[in-house]
Length: 436
Image 1 (tube, helix red, strand yellow):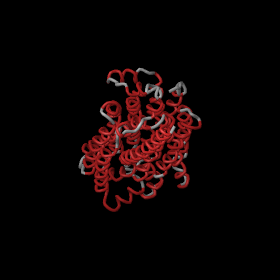
Image 2 (cartoon, helix red, strand yellow; image 1 turned 60 degrees about the vertical axis):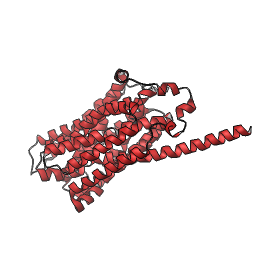
Image 3 (cartoon, one colour; image 1 turned 180 degrees about the horizontal axis):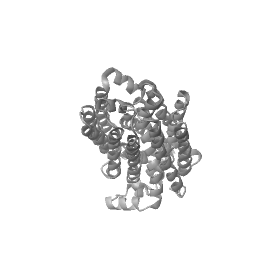
Image 4 (tube, one colour; image 1 turned 60 degrees about the horizontal axis):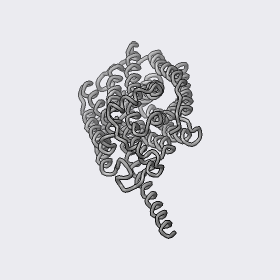
């Protein structure tokens, strides 16, 4: 009996240590993701400065901004495969280091081509972070914790987006945009070194039990080796994956197109407000996501226990935010703009459930590949909407250098609104499976 008591106490202590260490890993991953999100959202603030310095047309700025997303999309599937085979620790450390190099390329760029290459390298580097993080969460956390913690991770990431608004404006005012991005590049490289030092791919590397070990039934399935061809065949051979992907192409793509790029020029062109005020309004977008992401994850895990319901209704609410942008484009009060962009981010936070939804379509051993493949749709959408909206704005005659008329932004906002409606209609036919 005493032996049994001692064994239970030892197991409890071991689990307590495991939970503390996985929290440390989560904090380190969160730091790398915060840097990733800063890079992603920064063009909305720095974009007008770049347009002015290089005398860029909107289509050129859209091209530069979209390179991050094309690179991110290109990295998505390899990131999942690397996380499943090479390991998330090495994947995050090496690629985030590469993103830091891209940050220096961007900050020192003197041509449109070199700026585009800098953004491409950044996107290629940070494109692995969330995919690899989801692989780690799948090994360190229980299935009914995944959406909650992925939501918290996205909320932390959006703190990085918050930093890329008013704080970045203030930093740029003090040391200039080039020195600001050089500083961020240094922090990015530091984050990669810390990630390599702290992260461990699986609990058993630290002598801890995993949730699969405690559950018992799925241990062999989760640890079974997966080949490249098998993973690709299984993930891309499921119809439900494409319905989910089509929704996310527009859902994520539109708020990257608007919130992370064209909202800044829109506010300054149409309302004639300063960079400071524009940055304050833009800050509401990631602030809304800071609250929306973890709340959506919790609702998905604990209340509705459904990924589809959270995604569908969140996307519908997000689409409604385009009504004032389309029909009251130049007549919104400053207070309403604050509320609108907060609601835009809060409703957008519901997209967090898509990653766990993608994992649940397949066996646990395909978790990294499934999330990576889904990211192809997300970031292709981001690249598509940033570039196409820029091309549409560029098709209008400017009122002054870098200043475009009301009709240009109304037409540009109609594109993501239509894309969201198409995605919602397609996703209605998605049937989720929570059996696993």
